[in-house]
Image 1 (cartoon, helix red, strand yellow):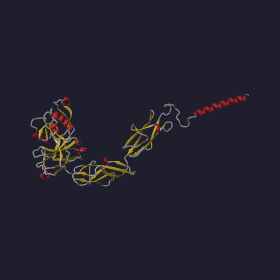
Image 2 (cartoon, helix red, strand yellow):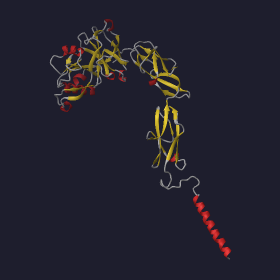
Image 3 (cartoon, helix red, strand yellow):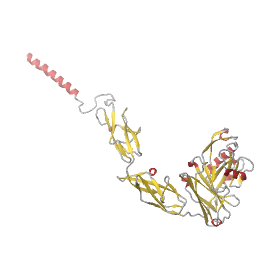
Image 4 (cartoon, helix red, strand yellow):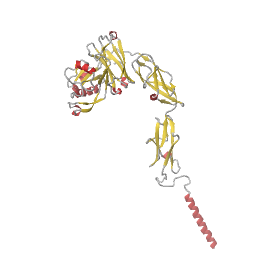
Amino acid sequence: MKTKNIFKSLFVVFALFMYSCSSDSDNDTGEPTDPGNGGSGITSIVVTASQTSIELGGSVTFTVTANDGSNVTSSSSILVNNSAITGIEYTPTATGSYQITAKNGSITSGAISLEVTPPVITALRVESAETSIKIGDTADFTVIGTDAGGNDYTITDSAMLTVNGNAIAGNRYMTLTTDDLVVTADKDGITSPVFNLPVGDDTAPSIFSQKAIVEDYTGTWCGWCVRVSEAITLLEAQTDDAFVIAAHIGDGMQNSYGQTLDGVYVTSGYPTAVINRDAVWAFPEPSNIAQVTNLASGNTTSGLSLNSMVVGNNLQVYVSAAFAQNTSGAKLVVFVLEDGIVASQANYTTYQGGVDPLPNFVHNHVLRHSMTNVFGDAIPSGSTAAGQKHTEVYDIPMPSSISDNTKVSVVAMIVGSDDKLINAARSKTGTADADFDFN
């Protein structure tokens, strides 16, 4: 009987032992056992990439693993340079080093680096949005590189372009003859096939839109000149067909060109603003904007096409004056202007809050250089007959007075034998506004 009780006791001990072992091994499948992170048991995560260095255009896939060895990619988010991406695959859009992290709930992984290198280019080609252009116009070229996998990349900034056998700076080229453009691109010893862009002559219309000119005689010392500056701001808000030239007198922006004009057109002190080299802008100028806009409207029989471009340290200008009827005695004026010059300005007006002086006043349209006589170079009589045109190409070193090549503009005028304006055009150098047509 005692033996039977001993066996019963041993059976109970064995059963308890087996139950205890079973309880300890219930989670041998890899499920987390620590209830620390909301019961999931995850206390840290690691992000890995299918590649740590790829060429631009390639893709990489990320995996997120928890500290217990489980794959938690589907419940995690991937961040590239601290910005979350969609999914787990990423295709960089630029070369460089990228920092990759992952988040799972409140847990953030350490960062890993992804290096994106330039693609290995095996072929080049040159493209242009235009199928043909006119003489005096600007062509814009794009260079496309192709890798061994047939993927295309825009590499214009890193390639060298050659036009008609001459290397150019950048990807823009102003056509000064009617010869077709023969263009190639080179990079890392690879040369593109030839790209041809046909160039045609510019044909003048029979009528032209009328423009106006305001020549503002001013100076930083002239406190009442702020009144004309205010009028110019109002004028430019109302029309794009009136062009301003600021001739500075008695300050650091003065030059001989403005002084010569001043000697003829300023007869009663400052400020003086002259419209079309014919009439003084009536006082108070801000109340007489229509005096200018009325002259910058309608059509006329003479006009200009104008383009300008900075090439290295040179300024190239193409200007063509066309005539629908005989205009004997016509002359051509070409001025170089600069915007954005900051200088203290005296102010005796209530404009600009009445502050005097205005310490950081921005002076625009400042006359810096004249490519012609300030009163005009004579246009040959044969070129001013009905149906004729006269073209000039200027290629000069950038005037030393220019502070910022990116803020240069060119104004061209046709004036009559009486020096009064017939018509005008403006080109903002280096911008889309520089692309020209007859006006």
